[in-house]
Image 1 (cartoon, rainbow, N blue to C red):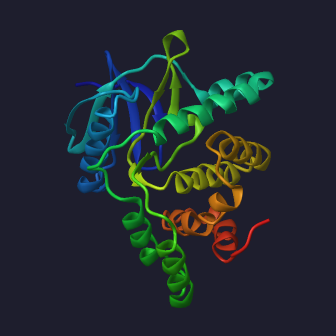
Image 2 (image 1 turned 180 degrees about the vertical axis):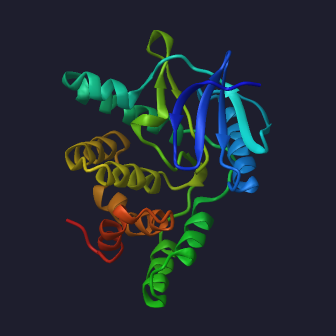
Amino acid sequence: MKLEQIIAVRAAKTLYRYEDMAVKVFNKDYSKADVLNEALNSARVEETSLRIPKIIEVGKIDDKWAIFSEYIEGKTLAQHMAENTAKHSEYLEMFVDIQLDIHSRRAQLLNKLHDKMNRKISESNFDATTRYDLHTRLAGMPKHKKVCHGDFNPSNIIIGENNVPYLIDWAHATQGNASADSARSYLLFMLADDAKTADAYLDLFCTKSDTAKQYVQKWLSIVAASQSVKGHEHEQELLKRWVHVVDYE
């Protein structure tokens, strides 16, 4: 198989188009367990009837793990938002509606969000006192069983034919509290230096889901600690500030 048409390049993976498939090829040192977990997450989410590219197979190309899935023709919602700023509010509303649809689904075999967050807090570089405080905060948060994308941002939505959205990149999917998923989306907008969209998103999510903004904000320190484990240097200062903030206005 000769892969030539590159769709996107990420830090540890490259996405290609090959005939009617999208082929995600991971670096040689990428964790086998993480590759298989991503494929398994996608397979489990497929069973919820959400519109996602179906997994075709998992294999190796030149001794690198690869995931083969359906190729969806279209642009990402992020591209649409950048190219048509006049429709920004309309696109943001679509974004929230899609996220609420995800949260309405159940997939009982997905990993639990609370377990993942506990593990990430333990893996973080914060001191023992801060980690204890974060574990305590997490223990006090309600446990739900809603499908949570875990990396929900406009670049993970492809707008296909007839304006139909498809959801991609389920590597971080869990079942748990929807407000944690929302807090992470808010965090991703902030890390992208788009505070205006972050605030508009949070207002819209809380209005449409009838959720108190303070409740979503209580998750911010927890999801910030989880994000810090990724080790992106340019994010660390902002994440540390969020981890150490207890009350939000």
